[in-house]
Length: 165
Image (cartoon, rainbow, N blue to C red; front, top):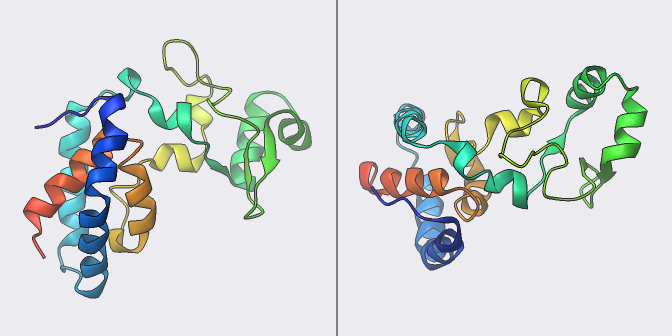
């Protein structure tokens, strides 16, 4: 299986963007009944081979959304009041969501470990969302994620082989 490097992933994703967009448009119109099962299998197989600590590109290039539950949980872990946590680390984006003030993530250490891993935001726990139920509903997000995450790229390439449309 192709294991794209980080400097290749953006170019590969860009080259495949139109093909992937057409595929996902068809997927929305004609969703296979077994899609969620296939995606779970592809996701599990890929993450048996993939060590996120070797990459951490998601933490280096994008910031997660922070829900109020995330803010409460992380603030408690850091022994801060939620508002202190917000003031110190977050900003409100154009969609009125709480996001990190800057990337790479403040909580990513030099060895690609997350310093708040046990209490990390829901968006981080679920990234790259390739095992999400009703996967066809997040195709725009997936198109973005294949340019960030080598595992997501591989999963989408395998998906197109397993579920030709």
